[in-house]
Image 1 (cartoon, helix red, strand yellow):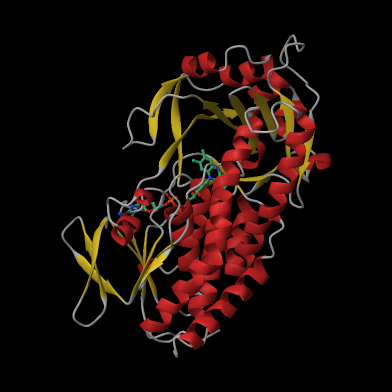
Image 2 (image 1 turned 30 degrees about the vertical axis):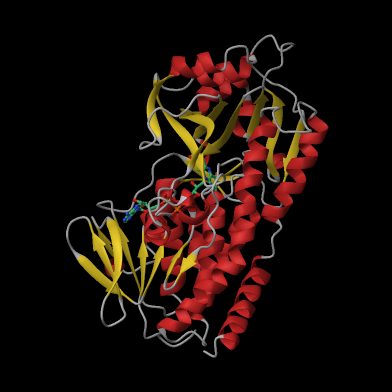
Length: 433
Ligand SMILES: Cc1cc2nc3c(=O)[nH]c(=O)nc-3n(C[C@H](O)[C@H](O)[C@H](O)COP(=O)(O)OP(=O)(O)OC[C@H]3O[C@@H](n4cnc5c(N)ncnc54)[C@H](O)[C@@H]3O)c2cc1C
């Protein structure tokens, strides 16, 4: 491990990106502090699943992250489905007369199959890997200035300030750090609505089994259809079924400030009118009051770069994506690993070196992460028979998913870090650092 650095990194935001980054830095002897707007760490929503690249990145960030994931993750129940990511079903099948077993149209596999963790549980486990005094809560960043000493000053909405040598924003899709970097009026300051929204529900597994049968309830499924799709996977060690029902339409999202709105089960049933009996049976199991999530991303106005001086952004703040690859959080963990390896590098000693590390991060991470945002849009459309050139041709859809998922999941995470460190060496040589 490298010797303790004599610069201090501030992280704005303690979600999956901020926490995994803080853990990776802390355990590499890089002094770090998290400033989180909420009164404590927490996550909303239910399940989040990870692809092989993400799990590899967890291990390399810090073994404790991987161990936590293994302790709490839920896989498909059936031994024969351990490598299945999703069984894809025709959710619009008119020949199916009643809910129950349905044959898959095709199956997408990966080396680790489907694995879901409960978001809040995962965060609880991550927090245990950090010293108690690493975070300050109730600190909502408003702006950043530079002190005469050259250190950066964070200004929080409660009127307080704090200093650090460099700042990393992991403050999510509506990132304030991004606004500080590019200005409120830059197009990338504001994410765009993808015209998809999602109803999310958690239902007791027993009820799901009764409604659609063992195989489809206890193992991950993607129910495809025109303009909508419903995915399900088991969470809480198989006791609960996580249901996410996506719908596409041309309307604008009613309130740009809020990413969720309250909805009723009846709204979901109306949106999926005409779908097959399994989709309807699943929606009927959800609670009468549901949350409806708008799917925003940074796809229309990608960031020109991820760093500016000694400020850099990671995770959703820099490349928020729609969730159709199931890879947004995984890419946050890749970011954390690359950033930690760069900052822990022995060559990085002064704040000027940190600036070079941020530039190397930008060069290394921008293309892959911005590809994900575009690919995820395409993939979501393919589930809904809207993707250009694919329509409802299942063979073509399967082929596209396999090749795109390969780019996500088969990524050589270790080589990615080596490339980033090489880039850093090049930048430092060029700047005579
Ligand atoms: C429906 C849905 C399903 C998904 N499913 C998956 C999946 O299966 N697999 C996967 O890999 N990804 C998935 N994702 C994507 C994944 O959830 C995100 O990529 C990931 O959670 C982003 O983490 P983050 O830490 O960058 O941001 P966030 O989780 O948004 O965390 C940001 C943190 O910053 C704090 N903050 C914000 N502003 C400020 C401020 N001004 N000052 C201080 N603190 C601030 C917030 O309170 C929060 O704690 C899904 C997303 C959605 C919407």
